[in-house]
Structures are given as structure tokens and as C-alpha cells.
Image (cartoon, rainbow, N blue to C red; front, side, top):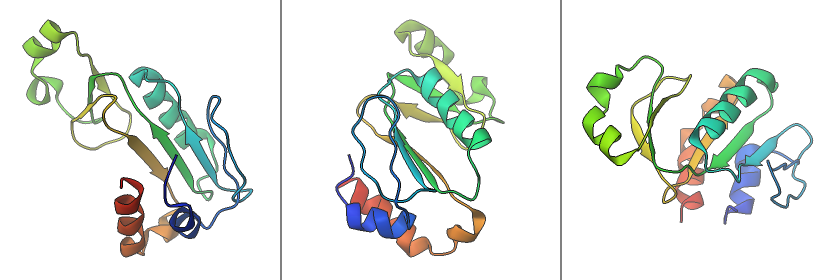
Amino acid sequence: MLQTPKLLAKWMRSSCTRSFSSTQTRSLSPDHSIYVSNSTNAYFNLSLEDWLFRHKNPKDPLLLIYRDDPCVVIGRNQNPWKEVNMVASRQTGIPWIRRRSGGGTVYHDKGNTNFSIHLPRCRLTDMSLHRSFYVQSVR
């Protein structure tokens, strides 16, 4: 899954790992979770991300990792007619999907790994630790 378990443990300060679907897991900490979706359905993965955000304790760090079939994902407040080439979307059959969170327009496919990190605000202070985790996790 991730090739930096020591950095992940330091970053998450956790002891419990869970996966979504059938991926094997190992324990890290009881109040922190890692979910790996084996689905490549973007509607499912974005719905899972939203469900986790709304139903998990916001004090417990959470990491969701997933890949999607080709699609264009737009943020909650974006205008799809300004962000998406509708003719190309229709011709290629690549759907555009609105996520419930904000942010820009991005293209997803099976060639990129998406991750959603849910942290308490107090954990967002050490940006160098976050950058190290991101860089090492994609290597």
C-alpha cells in the first residue's frame, strides 16, 4: 500500500489500520483509520469520502486512498460549463462528477492515486511533516 510505514505512523500518530473492501490490514492505533477502496467507480469513491467525512469522529485522523475510472471531478462551487469541455466529455463518454467538498477541477483515472485526508484542525500546523508524507508516499 504505502511504502513509508514509519513516516505514516509518525504522521498519523496512530495504531489502527482498517481497509475498505478486502485489502489486508495491520494494526497501528484504535482511533485512527486508513481506508483503501478497491472500487474504481468515482461515484462510489466520492460518496464514500463524503460519508466518512460526515460520520467519522472529526477528532480521529483518517486517510482514504482510491483510484477511479476516467472522469472529471469538479468542486462544489464550480460552474461545469466553464470547467469542463462538454463536447469532449460527451464524445469520449468521460463523465464529470461534482464532489461535495470545494476545490478545483481535476481529471481522475486509474493512473493516479487519490487520497483524502481528514485531520483535526490542530493537526494542520506542521506543514513540513505533511509535505514529507506526501512526497515519500508517491515514490
